[in-house]
Amino acid sequence: MKRTVVCAWALASVVGVSGVSAQDEPSGHSPAPDVAPPPADTAGAGPAAPSEAPLDFHPLFNGLNLAGWTVVNGAPSTWTVKDGQLVCSGKPTGVLRSDRMYENFVLELDWQHVKAGGNSGLFVWSDPLPAPGVPYTRAFEVQVMDGTETPDYTSDGDIFSIWGARFTPDRPHPNGWERCLPSEKRVKPSPEWNHYRVTCRDGAIKLEVNGAEVSGGHDAAPRKGYVCLESEGSEVRFRDLRLAELPPSDPPPPATQVAAEQRGLRTLYDGVSLLGWHAGEAHGEIGGHWEPRDWTLWTDGAGGTLASDWVGRDFELQLDWHWLGTPKDPRVPAHLRLDWPEDDGAYTDPSGWNRARFEFHGHKVTLEINGRTVLQDIDCPIGASAGTLVLQATGVPTEFANIFVRNL
Image (cartoon, rainbow, N blue to C red; front, side):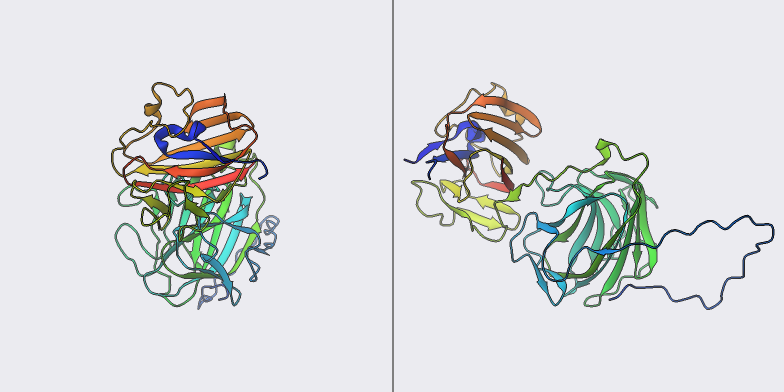
């Protein structure tokens, strides 16, 4: 027998739980100088300093499939492999993440925008999931863009901090941004291939474009994390991705300078369709009330509920939402209300993005809203039944994003 329970998700009538039966190009290099430098005067010099060991590169992309990578917030069509190249459709906006974290390393890759004006990026020292209310992670972005030249940002290899990451650019930005503008223009226009070499060591980032260093920064936090490639609206291709790890920092970076660990959360929304979703019980067809809009899932607020096909029993859920109007009552319950704090409205932002994280363990539920614990191990009468995710707007247009789950 199917029964519907909102439980902890009754807050803002944004989410609910529906119970079901338990049975239920080669590297670019600068040309050699025309005139060789004079020999060094070695008279009286001490022993020569030992040279650095040669870099031990290993492929980050095998040219065959996405082994070693995770599509964080996209569809199977977003990232594909063709002719040994990693092809990104650009839709939806989101990231592809390495399965491993890296601290000190040298990363090389080639990239090509298929059409002029394309946009993408390489993220280093990244968190595993997007920051609240955006499709991008906290990280440092190495710009992969074509045909844009402004006083504030360019297509020539900018490096900048995004969504909570912090660093000091090697050269001050004219507006004080945490962004290093390139010292010279070396990027070749679409559809030519470009080569990047990125060195990340002890909180410093350096970028070489087609054989010469052009930008960088230092004092980065975090300084250990994941590598990501960005999807941002246009087709871009990558090839010959390889990475050489360098000796770790001594002492190791403190926990505050290390990205969050990935916990196995996977997306329930692919950004291009409603695959994996269906109209909620007693609400008929989805119709035009629910629409995929790039990285957000939009509702006009008048179409009832939208339910996921995914089912879990003990699980963690994280999602973001944004009211595009004033909800009639952000605390309206659907089928069951727990004992909410009287000031629970203080946990949500009626005009901006909100993030909720739930954990269900048997009869117990824990809820965090915007990083603050609202409920801790509260009894929830779902019993032994499994649950699915139900989205419900509050009579006004609403956006949902960054919907991730994992079974515990």
